[in-house]
Amino acid sequence: MKYKFLIVLTSFFFFLNSCSKEDETVANTLDVPVANSATDINDTGFKAKWNYVSNAQTYLLDISTTADFKTLLPNYNSKPVSDLSEVVAGLNGATQYFYRVRAKKDSEISGYSNIISIITTGTSNIPEDPTFLKVKANKLQNPFFVGMAVKSDQLISGSKYDVILKNEFSSISAEYEMKMNPISVSSGVYNWTAADKIVAYGNTNGINVHGHALVWHVTVPTWLANFSGSDEEFAAEVKKYITDVVTHYAGKVKSWDVVNEALDDNNGGMRNTIFLKRMGPNYVKDCFKWARDAANAAGDKNLLLFYNDYATSTNIPKQDKMFSIIDDLKANNLIDGVGYQMHNTYLSPTKAQIETDLNRAVGKGLKIHISELDIQVNPANDISTFTNERKLIQKEKYKEIVKIYNALPAVNKYSITIWGMKDNESWIPYSTDLNHVGNDWPLLYDSNFNIKSAHTGFLEGLD
Image (cartoon, rainbow, N blue to C red):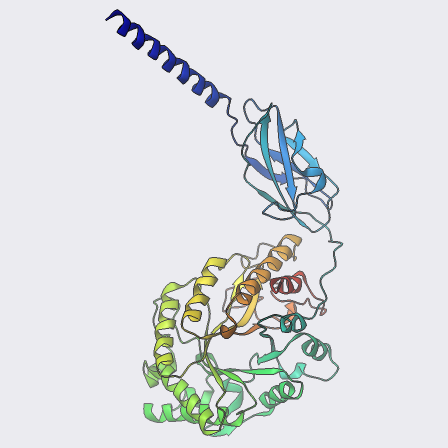
């Protein structure tokens, strides 16, 4: 009994000793520092800051030009710092940097802190990449069209628009002049002048022409909006218009947005348009059938038909409704692709949201057209000038969406179309539709036709 007591006592002693050592180890473990936002940001540097860590003797500072820290600056690769801040110098202007920090005591080093992003002020000394967009896109293993929305009065030989279009773009879409209202004067009477000029420009210069759009509730001509005939007669007028336009451009226009924005933003249903009211819930299918029949009758067996809409990456009920309509069209061999407008902001949608949306179309074997791309940098009107920070964020968002698109299977690629050439001519600034109250800079070129960082971002997305 005596020996048993000694054994138990000895075991208990070792247990207490073991716990004591474990407690000591825990007590000596360094906390992970918390990095704070940088201050004193200027053209060539900034002040990095972080919180105090108990028992830390020094801190190790990393600074990188990439968020994954694969490219560390030579002088800031685990640089020892004894204070709670460090004045960083010798950087480039208008450039994005990232920093993180660890605590150190003797040979013990903590985990990494959170990552802080900084963009220096001033002007970057790195010039934008002048490579032409379509030249780089055409060299891809699976190339696709690079498109631009145009107006007929821009298409003057030798103009800056003309030079840029021929150098940079392999596809064009009419921004407005191929919609119903500009073309349809009255029943069976058409003004083809502007639309013909756009189509002829593309055909003459070897540039793909995408037709936009046969049916859109915003561009209903007055004579049709006030049509006093029966609903059946109204539908017959829409059929005649679609048939005549598709026939007129057979073999010249390679694809059409047949119906544009038929879906409601709020309830996952159909938008309450004149077409829905007068033609019923199957009007989208009817329009696609009339377009397909007209193309076939004209001998245009290769015409591609698209449904085109916006904000489906973030509005899931709308996305679901779109694909329910598409499923029916696909089952009847009436649709070839989906046009995703992508009037995005620098904040939304996310990469994952875009990929999920596009992959639904991929799964259905459809071609994908990013059809009206622009990226707002001032949706909340919180800046009065185009800051370096927003320039670089916009560049990364263009790069992100091009990379997403470029990664699609070859059979699903059609085109990425930018919705306008110059910032000062974009539809976005002061848009009442968007409730956009201030200026913006959403495109690839500034008001003087100079390429922006966004243009470089597009090119980098092709890598």
